[in-house]
Image (cartoon, helix red, strand yellow):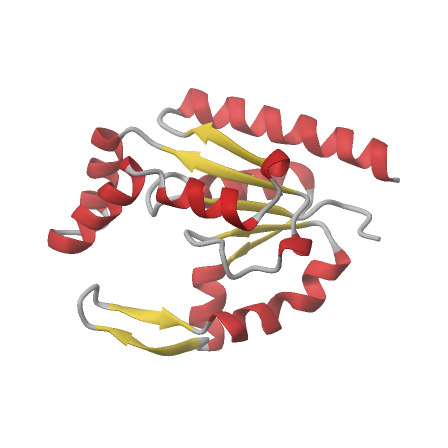
Length: 172
């Protein structure tokens, strides 16, 4: 049994998963893992997507890479997809949501353009990641968090830290 909870932070690129995840790890002592960085370091790819100009994640290898760490507990996972992680890994799932106009600016600042930019905005409009999370995990562990402003970030941190403290009391 994990002594500390595993948390998934997911959502469309640009919603603030990495900012929240790093800050949360800093404040709680949990281990932060950015799946995009992990894939880059371990070359966990199975090809290249010409249309989006990005490598294609080898999901099976990512799961294999993370399995031991996840079973120990105390991990914050950050990724914009969530349907390939084993359901048993996570005690709670947070889907970050950002207003389209704010998200548009954030993605433009990352040099997203054309189809890649439009598709990510559409993804947010249609709640694609939230629906993916609801289909992949028990409904009661999936929560949406607004992620537009620094105040949202602070509120989200407070809320998640409270949840972690309660989980620790209930499970240790």
